[in-house]
Amino acid sequence: VVHWPCVASQRKRLNWVQLAGHKGNFKAAGEGSILKKISENEKQCFERLSGDALQPFVPQFLGVVEKDGESFLHMTDLLATFDLPNVMDCKMGIRTYLEEELVRARDQPKLRKDLYEKMVEVDGQGPTALEHAQKGVTKPRYMQWRETMSSTHTLGFRIEGIKKADGTCRTDFKKTHNQQDVTAAFRDFVEEDDSIVRSYLGRLAEIQQVLQTSEFFKRHEVVGSSLLFIHDHTGRAEVWLIDFGKTSALPEGQMLSHAVPWQEGNREDGYLWGLENLVQVLEAVDCG
Ligand code: ATP
Ligand code: MG
Ligand code: MG
Image (cartoon, rainbow, N blue to C red; front, side):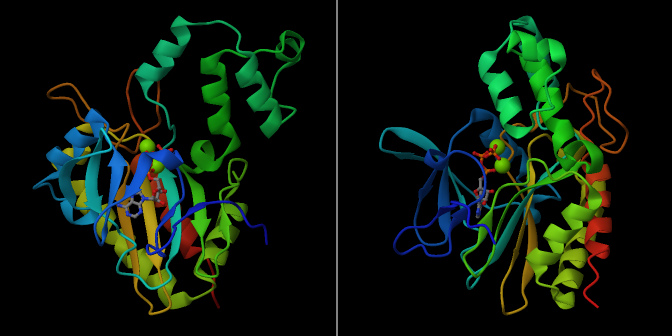
């Protein structure tokens, strides 16, 4: 088993683990809560989620806090009530960038050496012969290529990281894109415990149901958001929606289906399609 350097807790907050994002974006807060570096966009999402059908499935928003001259979103630590939790972050949707980011990237069509190098690092076969010769790729090309490497493109979600109770932690799923490999990662995560699988499936069914009624969900492009899976040895298993840093409101009167394919301009995110695939993967985790 590979031990990956996930950002684990120091000192008293033994439970806390961060499976994605920049290390500096999070700070410990009072008991049972954490601070995430503020983005105005995510703050607005938390405010709009207040009173929405989805509210019971997202961390409780406790307001904005100033610390060391910076502003943070104060929210509940979902891990706090677990004993040595197993944690998995699944980033949902068929793309993890906003349409406007793609448009902006196209405004600067210059060849980027750094992105070429990032591409080669993941897959030497990634760049075309021309790109190899130029030692550069454009940003939109890089963004779109990246999604085809992971299961984002094929399944509508990807695993960002898994931390298990035994201390092992993996964040190397950037190239995990077929259903078999994703299923194997899920099977390892639940340690072939059938009752945990059933609990997760129950919770996902609730989430699927509540997404049908949520006004927030209808009116937002949900990109880069994750489902956080948490279970421990007591048999408790929960799934929560986190990370609304890139979730953005649609123009007044517009709605998404979250289930039809994305074509640039329609802003569809494939969230429900990905969730359906995720449920199928979990159902295929045969613990027999
Ligand atoms: P990125 O956009 O790269 O995914 P980010 O900076 O937006 O990162 P998040 O994805 O919100 O950060 O969170 C990063 C990690 O921190 C999650 O994968 C999860 O492990 C942990 N985390 C975030 N929010 C919570 C929470 N409320 N309770 C417990 N753990 C959390
Ligand atoms: Mg995230
Ligand atoms: Mg984010």
